[in-house]
Length: 91
Image 1 (cartoon, rainbow, N blue to C red):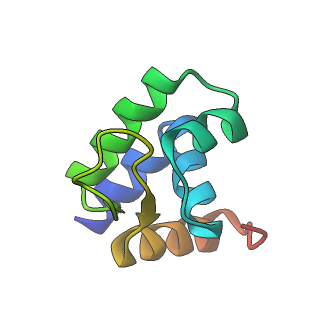
Image 2 (cartoon, helix red, strand yellow; image 1 turned 90 degrees about the vertical axis):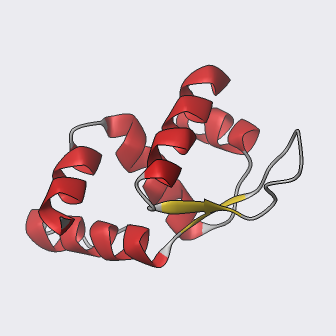
């Protein structure tokens, strides 16, 4: 299953960008939108998809706005494996 998740993440610059950003710090969808320069609607959809895969977690699920997201342990493992494969250790 790990290889499926790795393939899923690297198939999209947006998924990879969201995971990489959340690996640096906890963020809201608006912060991700600004940092990655993508529409908030795309960020929201990507967050939902990554949560379904168990790669991120919502730390404030009861909030309607400004929810806080963090990368999960599985997400960190996937990112580490991607960096190992690509040789990119910077993120």
